[in-house]
Image (tube, rainbow, N blue to C red; front, top):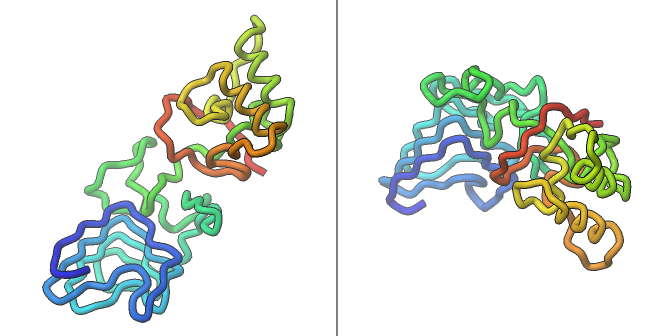
Length: 210
């Protein structure tokens, strides 16, 4: 980063590499304020350069000076697959800056991109059997058109086309993904459990990941 000031909050800096710093390299007279964030699996070092770092309430591999920083595996769900939500037991849970906006469950904010309170589910798995097959579009149609059908425990999983709503287009998209070659795959979280990074009003009260 050339002479400038950057502010990094609730971010994950992961899997980057260069000849000097993997995540951030500051030029002289540059300042980086990093809070509630994770710098992990970067090489050869996560943060370097001649600028000034102000890092706090963050997980930095190898450690870094600052208030409440620590060097402990953040325990992401599936970082290689792009899922940076926190597993139960992650050291980042409730470990963020207490002056930051708290999580939805009323606790101190978590470190990283996604709160551990964000529900984990597998998109398309309407019937909750941990698989995506023809029974899922059928279940969607039953929910929509058969009176007395039970509402899904994880409505977000029914949103096969990721448009933020549940309607017949989800069943159509699911069938296409299953049986029409060349159809784009379902959006994450798919084909494994994860959090939904897309804006949606659909909730997920219960989903049992394998």
